[in-house]
Amino acid sequence: QVRLVESGGGLVQAGGSLRLSCTASGRTIGTYTMGWFRQAPGKEREFVADISWSGGRTDYADSVRGRFTISRDNPKNTVWLQMNSLKPEYTAVYYCAARPRDVATYAYWGQGTQVTVSS
Image (tube, rainbow, N blue to C red; front, side, top):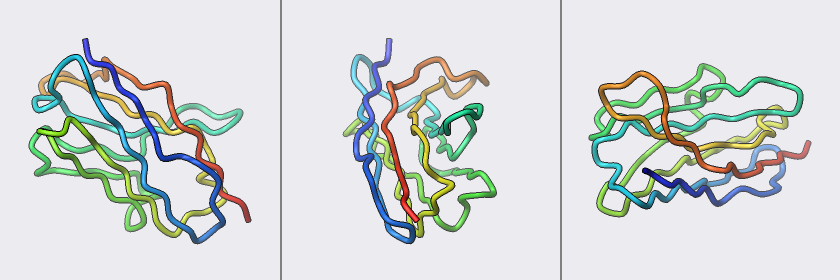
């Protein structure tokens, strides 16, 4: 069992930055692909970014590519999402998720952290 806890959300003005953290416990995430997702009010949850178990591969949604950076530190069991040049449409609850590297489905999810971008 992997427990994920997100932090770092908050209220920020458009153009500002936030850094989200996701700390895992219960099991090392060194063999897990880690992802960030978000869900805005009235919308379905959507993919934001993910990073391979080694950190050697990253992928981003088109809407955030060039603005967001995902990174990880396996010995610290932590994943980060650096968010720059934020837009009001990025307002959402951001979730961290984990899946074994050979499995397509995310098995573990955090409780989410609210990000609100004011115009």
